[in-house]
Length: 144
Image 1: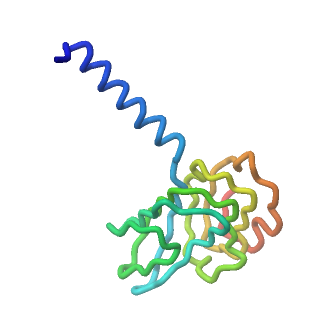
Image 2 (image 1 turned 90 degrees about the vertical axis):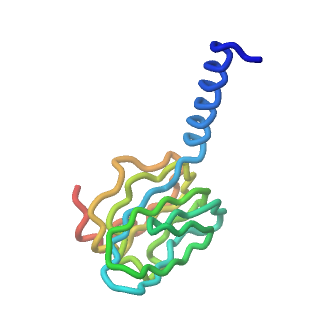
């Protein structure tokens, strides 16, 4: 049987492990403004793996494509790791509103091209970035 101090130590160890796990696999968080009903979007992540995506509408899966039924601002949380986030090769760039965090993604290439609705990104890039070609091409709404 555990005494009170042992239970307290076990609880703290469990909580510490949760915190460490969340730091290890922190999600990329994106805000998408969906301004039409029944809109399908695709997150342009390439060459990696996705553990899960929380689409912000009570749907969670591993697919990079999702259909929204309502007009709304959605917070999308992506767990996994992919080296490329490239909106130049994507037709849903009109819906990305804000990048809250890159999470623990080891991104090598970021391209926000043509995201004229994008208003803000984190004030840093991951240290792994190697390619920023056309990074802000036609990002007219971005506030510096």
